[in-house]
Amino acid sequence: MNKLLLAIVLFCVGNILIWIQTNGQFLWKWFDKNPLFLSIVFGGAISYFFIFATKCGYNYFNGLLWPIKFVGFSVGILTYALMTYYFMNESLTLKTIVCLSLAFAIIGIQVLWK
Image 1 (cartoon, rainbow, N blue to C red):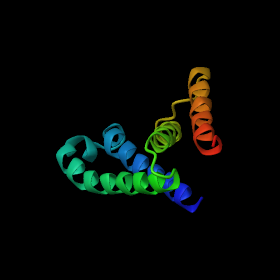
Image 2 (image 1 turned 120 degrees about the horizontal axis):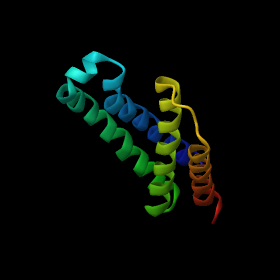
Image 3 (image 1 turned 120 degrees about the vertical axis):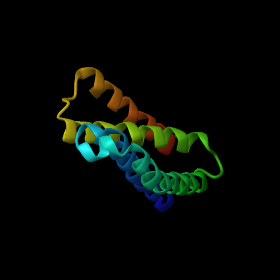
Image 4 (image 1 turned 45 degrees about the vertical axis):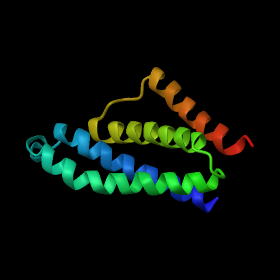
């Protein structure tokens, strides 16, 4: 279970960095003016988080890639929703809440269904 938790934490960190890298341009002028620098600086770190998260998840799911893909996708959706709500003040509509519920369901299916 530690490998799965580590994978989820790494996916969260990677997705937070991606959110900042791609959406920071709407919050900070400096980000808007320096996209190449941001892609170079953030790109390596983000890649490392996702590579290591995938490795941990692959080991947890006994050499299967599909479960970790679904978990990573769902963690990304959840992280995106929280970051967008917090930084951009975009409220959660019913449609978004249903989609987030589906993301939780995907994680539950992948982790609990043996």
